[in-house]
Image (tube, rainbow, N blue to C red; front, side):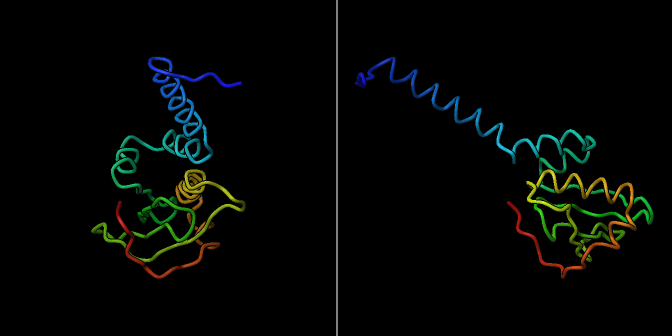
Length: 132
C-alpha cells in the first residue's frame, strides 16, 4: 500500500529524486570519460575545451598543431600556421568508447607518437563543424 505524499514531504521527495538523477548522470560513462580527459588537459587546453568542446595539441614529430573536437570519429583537424583548420584525420582506439576516452587516446597518440598515429589514420574531407 502506498501512502499519499503531500506538502513538505512531497517537496523533499522531489529534491531527493533530482539529487539521485544528478548523481547517476555524474557517474555515467560519458561523464566519467569527460572528467578523465579534463584531468589530462593542460590549463589552456581545458579552458579551450570548456569554451569550444575542442582543444589543440602539438604533434611530437613534426611540431604541427592539431585540433581535437568532441566526438569519436573524423574529429581531428590539422591546423595551418594561422590556426586555420585544414586536413581532417580519423583514428581511434578499438572498442565502443565514450568521446572523452577516444579524445584522450588521440591526444596521447599525437603528442607522443604522431607519425605512427597518422600512419594508421584516414584522411577525411574537411567538413565545417557545428558549434554549440
